[in-house]
Length: 490
Image (cartoon, rainbow, N blue to C red; front, side):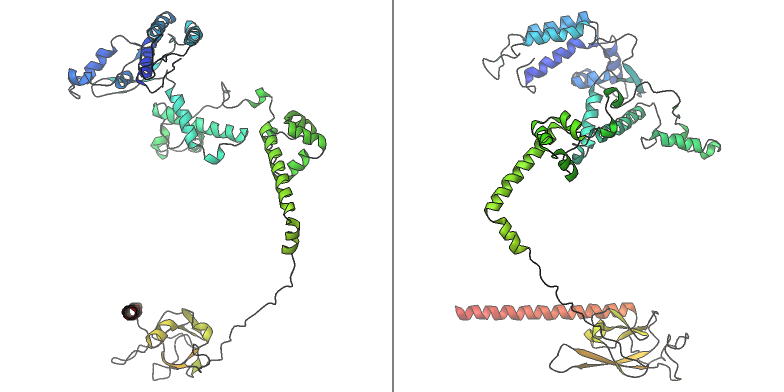
């Protein structure tokens, strides 16, 4: 009815006047709110009360929608006030649309039937709580704001990839959301206990399992839950009435004509192809049994046309010849294999080389001894070891001998170790022919093995520190050489 922007000041005033014509304040509501605001627990004066906005007053007080005679007079009075008024923001333009009178007459037909008026046998307010001042807060069930909020939350809760789902999936999604929304509203209104979820039948099943148990076994939260009686038939069935619409749910989801089988069936002959072009979905269903939509038929026609145009362009540029040159066959490449070096036979107490394949390893099990090779080579120190399968480090001592190979392979290194017993009596290391551990070396004797984890970590940190210092010195030397070169060029 309005021809102005809905956010303009005139539009807001028109809405307020229309609401005042429909909703009338109950007798004594304003005085009841004043007693609440002036209560010592709140302590508001008249000046503060006058500053309260309209939304607060409408929320705290109760209103009634009178009969058709009162509403019609009020709405017609508002119409007579606005008709013929020009929009101050657009000179020469009226506030109401040209057919505002016809719209008013059409809407008045609903008012005359009493569809807007309150029924005397239906309560529209429900008491929800009582404040410390004795003021009873009511909840209005007449408003449609809850329904509009439900639509917004349903839209926000729906995944973006599910916006174009089929009717069955959309119906199931809507049923689950509506049920959970109604349960939360029931809990908020105080009609049910807050179980922390919306699946009430789980609570019913829990109570059914605990029916023969003592009451102390039942959680306090479930004691407040009233089981749902599912014996009576439901009054209405929520959701889409498939049977009333005569729709077979097994075939309710239409085909999108995307799979190869569906496309071959739809384009099986010239007659069905013409039905696709003409968007004759009923004829396609009779001929092929495919239930589809006109939009899917149009999309299939567009895909076929696009592919035909693209293939014509590609063939004119010699795509077939290019395929023949690219899609060739070659002989299978020769399989290359590299045999791993075998460990040479080792005898405890005799020198033996460390295989090159073990250099990159962290802990390499060699014979019955696991060697920590990295720290030994980096620190030029004793090789850390522990018997294979055992973490003790005081079973034997190793004396490393580092030697470089010939100049032809300078990167190759070999390590020879001499394993000696730490006990003069000739006892063998633990894990080699005996399970008895060897005693630690006598006091004052130097330990040739790696020591504790803390000592090894300290050596690692020292090695890193030396490496950083060497890199820093190298960068500094390169910088000095670069500056000297620049000075010579100048």
